[in-house]
Length: 256
Image 1 (cartoon, rainbow, N blue to C red):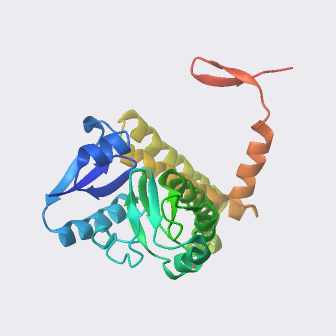
Image 2: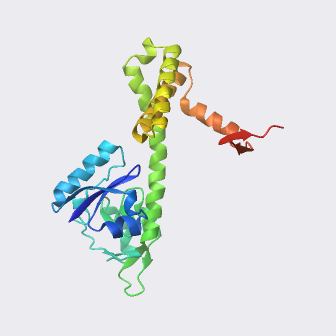
Image 3: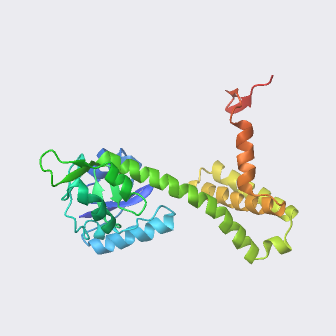
């Protein structure tokens, strides 16, 4: 049986063993996740995983669950601690490059060889002590490489999303026909919706309102011949060395 599970605010995934995959490996108690679907049809549940990842706004797996290891021509061996490749170190780098897109599941999570990480993967490979014609990498290190690449991708997406917002607004005439006053009025409206989401403890509404506020601020800054990312950087430069203390739930800066 395959289980399609949901960790609210985190991810949607598929597994055949909820306790091992979600509780033991990922550290979530049974009351911290929900099972959305169970099925013996791997194609059905794999397709639903991708569909729900998109609809919930989570990161979408590049390769569906049903294709994990299906394309594994390298015949790698995965244990609890390591991933072993059937090649000596002097051949491994080229084999990794030829296997870009290959995905497999480790005890620490899902890993995919990409054009960005294959060289780092190779640098962290070690010759097997049992067979010099084989090499391995610790699974924990693979997840570190995953984390580094995801962080890099997130920073690039963070930069590009502002440009996308500005392009979207330009095409719709917001900059030509609107003005800063109308954008400010829109900002007040969205802040009100954020207040409602927080008061109702509605996570979805809160997330939506915060996103809308960021869109409005991006457009408002542009109308003032500024970039919202520059405003944010300027604000951080001002507060990064600020000292103070928490008073009644609010940070109060220390005055000279």
